[in-house]
Length: 214
Length: 220
Image 1 (cartoon, rainbow over the protein chains, first blue to last red):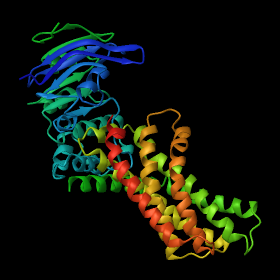
Image 2 (image 1 turned 135 degrees about the horizontal axis):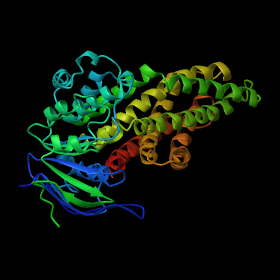
Image 3 (image 1 turned 180 degrees about the vertical axis):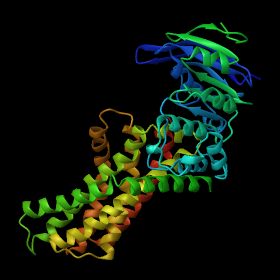
Image 4 (image 1 turned 90 degrees about the horizontal axis):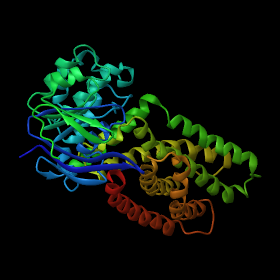
């Protein structure tokens, strides 16, 4: 069974099409890099795959569940890193993760481990608003993986990260199905098993081993 | 049990954030005191007119402080891009909403802790447990409605305009019943007990309705 099965995904913002008839099959364990210029539709596609947004048209099945009807069940299995870090600036790094553990019904004992995995132990007690953008990005990645999701959706995960980003992301992506958007062709080649090229809301081409239905 | 844990976690997070930033409560407390000062100068206050004017001033100050407090509850989440992350956790939307409403209620109660003694000071009105009970009961229902509409308009650019337009008409029952209760305590003709039961009825009605609507407001 495919991890993601999307057929004819179309989305409009007003009268402007953001995605038009995107068909995509992602097998379990695959790491798919979504490439494209600004405005190509990468973020819209990732938001739809994360269930943050419903497509205007098309069918989407994730891990055998209908993304429209089974949103809440799916969300328990998906980790999503959005463009914005989406962290509480007045709370410490530990408190942010502990809060999202409570939201997900996950044991708070995972927090120290998650902070260590992201190299954030030294800033665990610092307020998130005081952290650099790169450290906030690391914390947001820790939040996206704190519940050990089967599917990871990462929107420009390398943004603001330092030279260690590829190793860090490779560790995070291990043993998971991952769809990530990036502008960095080298990172896409290094971390992705397959690539999807988006242009003006259309899939223009696919790299090796990608199964794009057209 | 999960819903209660989620609601308490959301409320605790909001209250800790407010305690550390002190963005809202000091400003609201100043606002309600200033409103009373202006009313004190604007009206001819003496021992005979105070019981008639004070309830109106109390509810006006409370309504506008409430609009700011409840509006801020979701605007801050929108600005920080955190609301989407919370919704995507699969936590029950009704529990998330209940937590937000609980925290907003607590913050408004803090303002009332300034407002009611200040009202007693400026207007010479009695500060009693029944008065606090009436105001608190009204706050619960107003918070439920205020937070629901605040969540609805959080995505809009004109949210500062839309929130009062949507909320104020539905707050009228609380202002009427709450006003009657306060007037009764200040020597008016209204029946306090009847007004209090009416407030409890409205609270139950709107807390249930907003909890049911929370899923559609937060998730759709």
